[in-house]
Image (tube, rainbow, N blue to C red; front, side, top):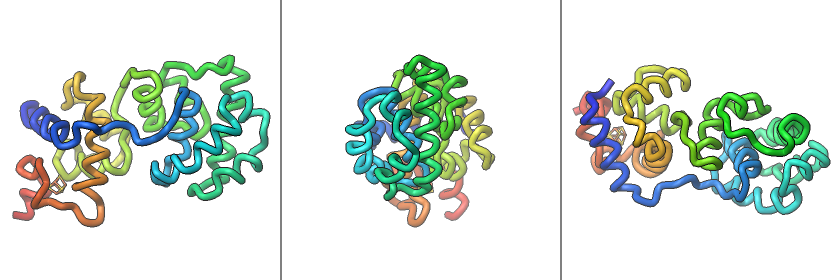
Length: 212
Ligand code: SF4
Protein backbone atom coordinates (compact mmCIF):
# COMPACT_ATOMS: atom_id res chain seq x y z
CA UNK A 1 0.00 0.00 0.00
CA UNK A 2 1.18 3.53 -0.73
CA UNK A 3 0.78 6.79 1.11
CA UNK A 4 -2.03 8.97 -0.19
CA UNK A 5 0.30 11.78 -1.29
CA UNK A 6 2.45 9.30 -3.24
CA UNK A 7 -0.60 7.86 -5.00
CA UNK A 8 -1.72 11.34 -5.99
CA UNK A 9 1.80 12.21 -7.22
CA UNK A 10 1.91 9.06 -9.34
CA UNK A 11 -1.46 9.78 -10.96
CA UNK A 12 -0.67 13.45 -11.54
CA UNK A 13 2.65 12.58 -13.20
CA UNK A 14 0.97 10.01 -15.43
CA UNK A 15 -1.77 12.51 -16.32
CA UNK A 16 0.90 15.00 -17.37
CA UNK A 17 2.72 12.29 -19.33
CA UNK A 18 -0.45 11.16 -21.12
CA UNK A 19 -2.73 14.23 -21.28
CA UNK A 20 -4.74 12.71 -24.14
CA UNK A 21 -5.18 9.24 -22.65
CA UNK A 22 -8.61 7.84 -23.46
CA UNK A 23 -10.33 4.64 -24.49
CA UNK A 24 -8.86 3.36 -27.76
CA UNK A 25 -11.91 1.39 -28.88
CA UNK A 26 -14.17 2.91 -31.56
CA UNK A 27 -17.93 2.82 -30.93
CA UNK A 28 -21.03 4.97 -31.32
CA UNK A 29 -23.59 3.47 -28.95
CA UNK A 30 -23.53 1.63 -25.59
CA UNK A 31 -24.45 -1.59 -27.43
CA UNK A 32 -21.46 -1.16 -29.76
CA UNK A 33 -19.22 -0.41 -26.76
CA UNK A 34 -20.29 -3.67 -25.14
CA UNK A 35 -19.53 -5.65 -28.30
CA UNK A 36 -16.19 -3.86 -28.86
CA UNK A 37 -15.02 -4.51 -25.30
CA UNK A 38 -16.11 -8.13 -25.59
CA UNK A 39 -13.96 -8.52 -28.72
CA UNK A 40 -10.98 -6.81 -27.08
CA UNK A 41 -10.28 -9.69 -24.65
CA UNK A 42 -6.97 -11.31 -25.68
CA UNK A 43 -6.91 -9.04 -28.75
CA UNK A 44 -5.47 -5.58 -29.40
CA UNK A 45 -7.75 -2.55 -29.61
CA UNK A 46 -6.24 -1.83 -33.05
CA UNK A 47 -7.35 -5.22 -34.30
CA UNK A 48 -10.84 -4.71 -32.83
CA UNK A 49 -11.08 -1.30 -34.51
CA UNK A 50 -10.32 -2.93 -37.86
CA UNK A 51 -13.13 -5.44 -37.36
CA UNK A 52 -15.91 -3.32 -35.87
CA UNK A 53 -16.62 -0.97 -38.84
CA UNK A 54 -17.75 -3.98 -40.91
CA UNK A 55 -19.46 -5.63 -37.93
CA UNK A 56 -21.39 -2.51 -36.88
CA UNK A 57 -22.29 -1.65 -40.47
CA UNK A 58 -24.00 -5.01 -40.80
CA UNK A 59 -25.31 -5.14 -37.20
CA UNK A 60 -25.68 -1.58 -35.88
CA UNK A 61 -28.25 -2.57 -33.26
CA UNK A 62 -28.90 -5.50 -30.90
CA UNK A 63 -31.99 -6.41 -32.96
CA UNK A 64 -29.91 -6.77 -36.13
CA UNK A 65 -27.24 -8.84 -34.39
CA UNK A 66 -29.76 -11.05 -32.60
CA UNK A 67 -31.56 -11.77 -35.86
CA UNK A 68 -28.33 -13.02 -37.43
CA UNK A 69 -26.53 -16.27 -36.57
CA UNK A 70 -23.38 -17.07 -34.61
CA UNK A 71 -21.83 -18.42 -37.83
CA UNK A 72 -22.45 -15.14 -39.71
CA UNK A 73 -20.83 -13.16 -36.88
CA UNK A 74 -17.88 -15.58 -36.86
CA UNK A 75 -17.18 -14.80 -40.53
CA UNK A 76 -16.70 -11.10 -39.71
CA UNK A 77 -14.68 -11.39 -36.50
CA UNK A 78 -12.53 -14.34 -37.55
CA UNK A 79 -9.25 -12.41 -37.26
CA UNK A 80 -9.92 -11.86 -33.56
CA UNK A 81 -8.63 -14.34 -30.96
CA UNK A 82 -11.25 -16.72 -29.51
CA UNK A 83 -13.64 -15.64 -32.24
CA UNK A 84 -15.96 -18.62 -31.81
CA UNK A 85 -16.65 -17.87 -28.14
CA UNK A 86 -16.86 -14.16 -28.82
CA UNK A 87 -19.34 -14.65 -31.68
CA UNK A 88 -21.55 -16.78 -29.49
CA UNK A 89 -21.37 -14.29 -26.62
CA UNK A 90 -22.09 -11.33 -28.91
CA UNK A 91 -25.14 -13.09 -30.34
CA UNK A 92 -26.42 -14.26 -26.92
CA UNK A 93 -25.86 -10.83 -25.37
CA UNK A 94 -27.73 -9.15 -28.25
CA UNK A 95 -30.62 -11.58 -27.85
CA UNK A 96 -30.72 -10.98 -24.08
CA UNK A 97 -30.63 -7.22 -24.62
CA UNK A 98 -33.61 -7.39 -26.99
CA UNK A 99 -35.64 -9.88 -24.98
CA UNK A 100 -35.01 -8.75 -21.41
CA UNK A 101 -33.97 -5.11 -21.63
CA UNK A 102 -36.05 -3.77 -24.53
CA UNK A 103 -32.78 -3.25 -26.46
CA UNK A 104 -31.51 -0.66 -23.97
CA UNK A 105 -28.22 -1.47 -22.26
CA UNK A 106 -28.69 -1.05 -18.48
CA UNK A 107 -26.62 1.67 -16.78
CA UNK A 108 -25.91 -0.64 -13.88
CA UNK A 109 -22.68 -2.54 -13.35
CA UNK A 110 -24.36 -5.53 -11.69
CA UNK A 111 -26.85 -5.85 -14.56
CA UNK A 112 -24.05 -5.55 -17.13
CA UNK A 113 -22.18 -8.43 -15.51
CA UNK A 114 -25.15 -10.69 -16.28
CA UNK A 115 -24.48 -10.48 -20.03
CA UNK A 116 -22.56 -13.38 -21.60
CA UNK A 117 -18.94 -12.37 -22.20
CA UNK A 118 -19.11 -9.37 -19.85
CA UNK A 119 -17.08 -9.73 -16.64
CA UNK A 120 -16.29 -7.15 -14.00
CA UNK A 121 -13.49 -5.60 -16.08
CA UNK A 122 -15.65 -5.15 -19.18
CA UNK A 123 -18.58 -3.88 -17.11
CA UNK A 124 -16.28 -1.24 -15.59
CA UNK A 125 -15.14 -0.16 -19.07
CA UNK A 126 -18.75 0.07 -20.30
CA UNK A 127 -19.87 2.11 -17.28
CA UNK A 128 -17.05 4.58 -17.86
CA UNK A 129 -16.93 4.81 -21.65
CA UNK A 130 -20.55 4.29 -22.67
CA UNK A 131 -22.29 5.98 -19.73
CA UNK A 132 -19.61 8.29 -18.32
CA UNK A 133 -20.29 6.83 -14.87
CA UNK A 134 -17.09 5.21 -13.61
CA UNK A 135 -17.85 2.69 -10.86
CA UNK A 136 -14.44 1.16 -10.29
CA UNK A 137 -11.20 0.33 -12.04
CA UNK A 138 -11.01 -2.08 -14.95
CA UNK A 139 -8.13 -4.37 -13.99
CA UNK A 140 -6.59 -5.58 -17.24
CA UNK A 141 -3.14 -7.05 -17.72
CA UNK A 142 -1.50 -3.58 -17.63
CA UNK A 143 -3.26 -2.42 -14.47
CA UNK A 144 -2.49 -5.74 -12.82
CA UNK A 145 1.24 -5.55 -13.63
CA UNK A 146 1.65 -1.86 -12.76
CA UNK A 147 -0.22 -2.19 -9.46
CA UNK A 148 2.10 -4.98 -8.40
CA UNK A 149 5.33 -3.29 -9.57
CA UNK A 150 4.59 0.06 -7.98
CA UNK A 151 3.36 -1.52 -4.76
CA UNK A 152 -0.34 -0.67 -4.90
CA UNK A 153 -1.39 -4.30 -4.53
CA UNK A 154 0.22 -7.64 -3.81
CA UNK A 155 -2.84 -9.55 -5.01
CA UNK A 156 -3.18 -11.57 -8.24
CA UNK A 157 -6.95 -11.76 -8.39
CA UNK A 158 -8.31 -8.76 -10.39
CA UNK A 159 -11.23 -8.26 -7.98
CA UNK A 160 -8.87 -8.02 -5.01
CA UNK A 161 -6.52 -5.73 -6.93
CA UNK A 162 -9.45 -3.46 -7.75
CA UNK A 163 -10.43 -3.35 -4.08
CA UNK A 164 -6.87 -2.40 -3.08
CA UNK A 165 -6.78 0.32 -5.74
CA UNK A 166 -10.12 1.76 -4.71
CA UNK A 167 -8.92 1.96 -1.10
CA UNK A 168 -5.93 4.07 -2.13
CA UNK A 169 -7.05 6.11 -5.12
CA UNK A 170 -9.20 9.17 -4.39
CA UNK A 171 -12.55 9.01 -6.18
CA UNK A 172 -11.84 12.03 -8.37
CA UNK A 173 -8.94 10.14 -10.00
CA UNK A 174 -10.78 6.92 -10.84
CA UNK A 175 -11.61 8.02 -14.38
CA UNK A 176 -7.98 9.09 -15.03
CA UNK A 177 -6.50 5.89 -13.64
CA UNK A 178 -8.62 3.80 -15.99
CA UNK A 179 -6.96 5.55 -18.92
CA UNK A 180 -3.44 6.52 -17.87
CA UNK A 181 -2.43 3.15 -16.41
CA UNK A 182 -3.27 1.42 -19.69
CA UNK A 183 -1.37 3.98 -21.78
CA UNK A 184 1.59 3.82 -19.38
CA UNK A 185 1.56 0.00 -19.55
CA UNK A 186 1.60 0.01 -23.32
CA UNK A 187 4.25 2.70 -23.56
CA UNK A 188 6.75 2.42 -20.67
CA UNK A 189 5.87 -0.22 -18.09
CA UNK A 190 5.30 -2.98 -20.62
CA UNK A 191 5.65 -6.63 -19.72
CA UNK A 192 8.59 -7.54 -21.96
CA UNK A 193 10.86 -4.56 -21.70
CA UNK A 194 9.90 -1.95 -19.11
CA UNK A 195 11.80 1.30 -19.65
CA UNK A 196 12.55 1.77 -15.95
CA UNK A 197 15.37 4.29 -16.31
CA UNK A 198 13.19 6.72 -18.24
CA UNK A 199 10.04 5.93 -16.25
CA UNK A 200 8.56 9.16 -14.85
CA UNK A 201 7.38 7.43 -11.68
CA UNK A 202 10.39 5.21 -10.97
CA UNK A 203 11.10 6.93 -7.66
CA UNK A 204 7.75 5.60 -6.40
CA UNK A 205 8.16 2.09 -7.81
CA UNK A 206 8.85 -0.68 -5.26
CA UNK A 207 10.12 -3.02 -7.98
CA UNK A 208 12.60 -0.46 -9.31
CA UNK A 209 13.84 0.49 -5.85
CA UNK A 210 14.36 -3.17 -4.91
CA UNK A 211 16.71 -3.66 -7.88
CA UNK A 212 18.88 -0.62 -7.22
S1 SF4 B 1 10.18 1.79 -12.75
FE1 SF4 B 1 9.95 0.17 -14.28
S2 SF4 B 1 8.70 -1.41 -13.32
FE2 SF4 B 1 8.51 0.45 -12.10
S3 SF4 B 1 6.67 1.46 -12.88
FE3 SF4 B 1 8.40 2.31 -13.97
S4 SF4 B 1 8.62 1.07 -15.83
FE4 SF4 B 1 7.29 -0.05 -14.41
